[in-house]
Length: 135
Image: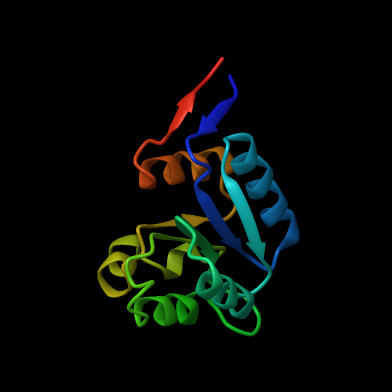
């Protein structure tokens, strides 16, 4: 069943791997989210400063600014410090989700490859279950 998100919640996806961006973008759009994409952390930082998304999904390893530095910048900004962040990584063995939560306020860490549907389920939970099935 198609899903719709009330009032088009805004999601920013930041990753330098275009195939991951496209798969996640397509799945999130089908679920009714308004999706913006950034190809590196510096571009994502510029975008969140212009228009705060409801959720940021960012890769750890990216050019110009990595996901950890992006998270540091966001947590240090009074207007953005409580922005919900999900982290993506190809090196899941290096990042402990509970450590990322304690140190950086990251809500969860998803290891690549991941299911785009699982990512959308995580986003649904973050935005308070705003996504509801429609006919």
